[in-house]
Image (cartoon, rainbow, N blue to C red; front, top):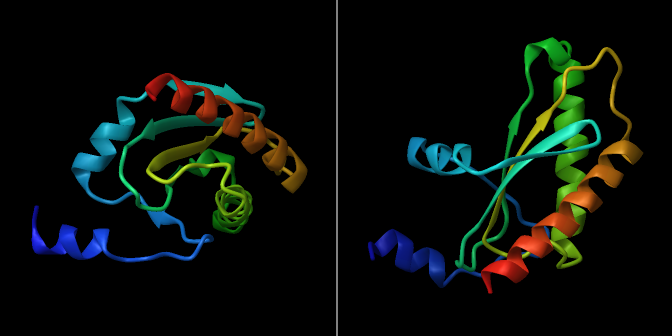
Length: 131
């Protein structure tokens, strides 16, 4: 274990902390995960056994809309996932890749919330299988 990894294991995080998925190796790991679709969003999830806060990444195509529309969608998704992780619904060590299906309309906060709640149920099922 490197000193950087050792230092990370001793850190404490606020409940609302979300990390980004960074690095080519991590992207390769998450890209091999199975895809499932819930409402207007699709997901890939990985469950690691570490104690780090949930990690999240986004895959939103330019076909969805301009930068303003894409960034608004990312902020909405981030907020919903953050609220789920603060409520301890999304376990530590979970990696999530979120994508948006191509659409002519903007996705509402309620749609994202419903979709993420269904995601939470699927993640919990996976977590129970891995235990």
